[in-house]
Length: 139
Length: 470
Image (cartoon, rainbow over all chains, first blue to last red; front, side, top):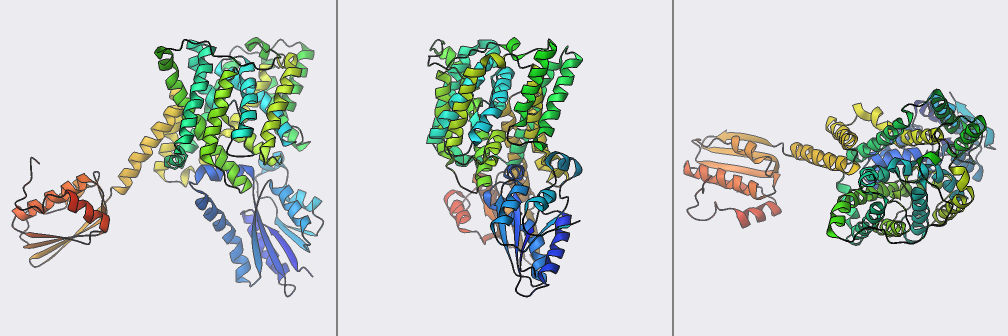
C-alpha cells in the first residue's frame, strides 16, 4: 500500500485536516513512513526576518508551526521525519516529490485566500498536475 | 540566467528612482551598473543584488534641488567612505540594537514615501494617464499567470510604451524628465570646491545615506541568508557597499544599497553566487547602450505603475494583520517611526525616533520593581525583586518606612540586580537613614556584580557615614 508518504504542510487549518488523512493512509500499512515538508518562500523569509530579531527566534517559530502537525503523527504512532525547504511552494514541493520514490503525496487545498490564489495560482493544483505519484488533496 | 532577469527588472526601477531623486535617468542607471558589478566582486553576501534604491533616492531630493548634481556625486563618495569605516570598525553587530518594530516601521515608511512620490505625477494628468497606470498594474499582477520567464514590470513597460507611441497620446515620457545618453560611464572628479563648506553641506546627507544604506543592505542580507540557508559576512558587506558607492560616485552615479525586492527575485530565479550580480550589471549596461533611444519614449505612467507595485511589495502587510497581536508599545514604536519619516521625508530620522522611543519603553518596562516587607517583632525584612537602577530607585526609596521601630532591618536583594551609581546612592540613603533612626541594617542576597559595585562605591560602610547634601 502507501508506505512512503510525503505530506506538505503550510500551517493552515486545511493542511492540519490533511495531516489527519495522511495519518489514516499511513496506518493502512505497517512500516509506513511519512516525510513532512514545510516550504518557506521568499515572502515568508522577508516577513520572518523583519519580525523576529535573530536566526534562532525564526527557527523556533518555524519549529512551533511544524509542531502542530508533528503532534498529529506522534499521537498516532506514525513514524515521520521533518524537512524544511526554501523556495516557491509549488515547484519546490513538486521537485522534492519527484526526486524520491514516494507512494503518495498528501496536501491540503486552499491555504491562501481567494485573491492570492487568483494571482499566484493554486499550489495544490500545480502539485496534482506535476507530481508523478498519486496525490491526495484534502478539502 | 537569473542575472538577466534581474537586469530586466532593474531598468524600470533605476529610471524611476532617478526621477524620485530629481536627477537624469542615466544617474540611476550608471549607479545600478557600477554597484552591481563592484558588489559582485567585493560584497559579503553572494546572491544579493544592489543598485540605485528608493530609500537612498528619497534622501537625496533636497540635496539635488538645492546644490545640484555635482554635490550628489561628492556625497555618494563620502557615503562610501563612511560605510567602509562602518565595516572596518565591525559595527554590523550593533544592528541588533535596532528593534524589529523600528525595522518594520522603516520598510512601511519607505513604501509610503515611494507611493507618495508617484502622486505628483498625477497632478493635472488626463484620463489617459490613469488608464495607462491601471493597465500597467493589471499587466504587472496578471502577466505572471501566463509566463514567469520575463519580469512582468518589464512587459508592462514595453506594452504601455508601444501603446503610447502608436496612439500618439502625448502623455509625459521619461525623455521629458531628463537626458538619456547612450554612453559608457566615464571616470571624473565631482566638480565641487574641496572646502570645509562643501563638507558641511554634504556630511549630513552622507551620514543619513550611510545609515539607511547599511540598514537596508544588512536587512536584505539577512533575508537572503534565510532564503538560501547560508550565513554571510555582514562587515564585509558593509565595506563592499562602501567601495561600490565610492566607485559609483566617481563614475557619475547616485548612492545605492541592496534591494530587497530584486534580491528575492534573483534568489527565486536560481541566483546564488556572485555571478548573477555581475551579469545583471553588464547586461544592464549593454541594454542602456542599445536601447537608449527607446527608453526616452517610455511614458511616465508605466513607471508610476511599476513604482506602485514596488511600494505595495515593500510594505509589510503582515504588520497590519499582526497589529492586534503584538504588544501595544511595539505598535506605537512602529507607527511613530512611520509618522516621523512621512513628516520629515528622512528615513534616518524615523529610525532614530523609533530607537529612542523603544529604548524609553524598554527602560519603563524593566524599571518595574516589587518590594515586599514583612515585620516579625523587632525585625523587618524588605524583599526587592527587579532591576535596581536610575529609573527604579525612587520607587524603592518610597517603599521604605524610615520611622520604623524595628531594631533590625534586613534588605533581601536575592531577586534583584544593582546596576549603577544611582542605585548605590539610593542604597546608601536607605541604610544611613535607617541607622539614624536607630536600626541596624543588613544587606543580604546580593549577587556578585552587585556586591562588587556596592563595595566599590557605597559610603555607608565607612565609619561615621552621613548623607552629604541629599
